Image 1 (cartoon, rainbow, N blue to C red):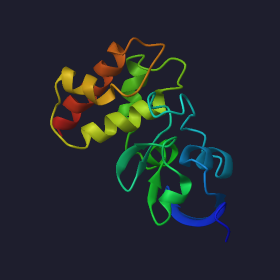
Image 2: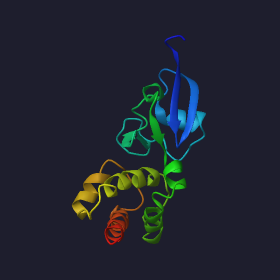
Image 3: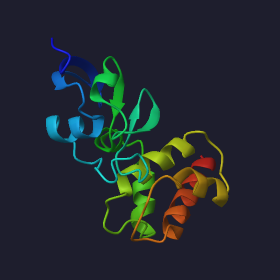
Length: 160
């Protein structure tokens, strides 16, 4: 295989994927263009906006800053996979109930980022929630509804 193309084998949302990719293809483009997983978006392409957020080996990463080739052997989870498993059903419902989504462009990244915080357990302070989502830009909601939704889910999960 030439240096310009490489083989990758990874697990995406529980499915094994074997592909040949351009060595410089970033992960979010690979997911969107090759696998048709369009939940993660291409925004700033500098890792600042959070629209391209996915999980790699259980850690939230910016898909625009990671190459698909770097994920060889990794477990990648997108918003589609996390949603299909029901892992964030309560969070999605809270976002809807509190109008924490409007255009929806930032929502997948917000949900994955919020879930990363909530998976730690407990009820984080509003300041901690703000800090957690600070790398995810939203141009529609003003963030308060998003913080309200995350806080409500943390409280509800804490009662279980």
